[in-house]
Image 1 (spheres, rainbow, N blue to C red):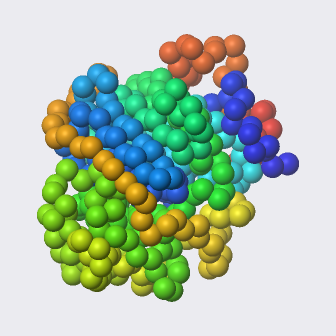
Image 2: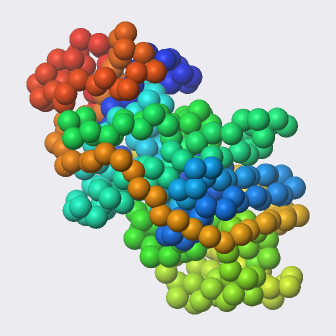
Length: 357
């Protein structure tokens, strides 16, 4: 029997993700300044106000906000959750995984630099505080959250963390999730990455595409550059045609021009009204207005962050497993048993009557 839609709220479950899964993005995060676009973390808060959406992002400890590169971890975890739901498995916001599995799915190498990159990403994701009125109502300022919490890293058990309720609700809502072209993770610029996510969210597979006022895009992106410089970068990206699945062109209109995005291939998939292992060619896309009445305030400064502990290369079973924590409780420091051998893991799954894909 397929788990209940809100089964992830059960406090006595943790979710071990170890099988391959295609990363997926959350619509609410695409096209808004939730993540700075530079590789150097920002420390000054982002404050975005629009007619339909408000977003504030900060790093109170001064370590720097999570960047669009750090968000790769969230996209991967969202894909793992959707994949588990596709196989009728229970999921939880309390997650454990091996870095090696993430590296494989995202196309990272497996050297020391990648472990340091993951280390820094987890630290910034845990330190970044977000408040938004998207799905949070009028009292959204009283509902701040961090992307992840309760992060534990060990050579024996890999990475354990807890996802924000806000993010988990979106990941489990089939209408709010979109698949990501694997080529996205090979894009070399933060603005290119953001443009892909913007086009994926709004243009989708619509033959006619979607158009955006460049002045509005400047506010939406959170770019620290001047508007004219931002527009010049957009034009350069449009001419280079480096964004997978979409073509961009800038036409006259407004003060800076209008960017038009149109799909060029069927390389991306979607999860819309049903969770399925194989996504069909048809797709329905919810699209927003051409432009909102926006105001933004940006300030520029950055500082790197360190994260204590070490991450070792681990070998894991190639299954997605959900298991009961027992009496340990969520406030404990993740007293996770050592990694079982494959045979023992299969027996444990059978004992708990949890399906294995």
